[in-house]
Image (cartoon, rainbow, N blue to C red):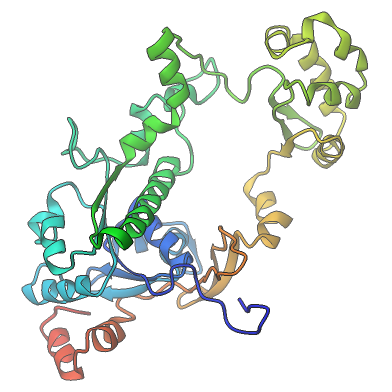
Length: 400
């Protein structure tokens, strides 16, 4: 990005260095957020590379999974089971601001890199601990993945059709939100460090995140004993409606501001004066007649026709896109949510793009590193090791 004066813009976190020891999603996605904010993110991998490099699906041999969480980072492949490898990481801690890890609680301390160890090397280091159930609590020693957070929090019980079974979200919702919690926490700690001069440890977990997704129904039950029912695709007027070539989702149409516009748009202005539908409660409890009209109205139109008609009347709706149709979205392209970058394996591939827009700062989007691609520049340029010293580590099998 170039500023109005012709100078090259930097990322908002230019000058911040992050050590990413994360695996799979929640940890690495936090590292990705830092990379998009302009930080120098060093992906610390085993000699064989992060195991998620082999996860599908694949684009011309490259893992579409791997690139979404690790593009724009530098790769250091090193054997942290060796004392020499640990010493390299210790030296990196001394010149870094954040360390991210999502091993099982206690593992990183056994490796010699618990927070008490880190702050002896660098009192300003911010340590981000991501786990399934937290660094303390009744289940801290259990392992878990995204779907565990969905299940235990109650979220999965509310997902799916009323007459069906609990349904898992098909994308890593819990991992994704947890990574944002981790990023926000780390940014808060970096801000506080300006005043205290010290870093701190952050604890986020999938279980906590799962419960935050159900804050409203949990509060309703704890306070009033209300047990919500599974509602499928909608609740009354707000729902997914079938068109001649797909579905369109109608949202928020029961609100006092939107319902009158909906009545006019579908040709039933008399709804606005009907005593049954003068408030949201009535529209929800007596929605059958409205829904029957909407089913016919949508059923006579294509997705595009229904969407354009409703949006022209400021009625919130969206096509229920399948992946091929979503991939062709003008919004996806023009907002640079995904951008195509050069890739060492696929040639070119789409990765997470400029998901935050700044008025001045850049949001750098880089390629995905090969395993250990940046070993020499990280150890040489950053740590000041000589070529002979790096060669000795390579010969000894400490680095790739």
